[in-house]
Image (cartoon, rainbow, N blue to C red; front, side):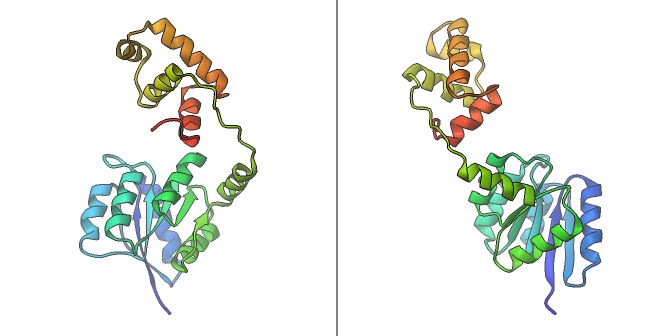
Length: 210
């Protein structure tokens, strides 16, 4: 019987211990090592590579997306399954586009975790069932692109996504903070967003910003 080697990187000890326990109960899996941050992981990968890497989305110092991009570039044979407690669809799409093989929510049961490993080792992709459903709904949902933004609104939208404050935008564009706020309100209305986070998400999804 072939053995699937696994590495786990998660800064929550309970999560890592729980995964190790699950894999130790299955003779086909061998956990090579666990890490609490990306630097330790990247250092160890210079010495040996696992078949599958379970990678926390949010880590100290180096975030999951940056680590994943580095690993997929240097070690394309490693199958990466993202671990996250957040089911933000844009985030899921981003990691899959990077080349990750799977995306698991941290509340996944043992059987789902085992299935995820087996699926990616066989060359497939795996998503937690709730994420599969969300992606399907998103795929068939009719989206009306925003096309009536003014040049100034597009400028301000770009700066909002770059995390400029109203005052900083006003200074950069030589307008008043009140004018910036009026444009922000208009953008929220036109893009049917409830807050700045929603505004940024929709701007990225529709390719309205760089």
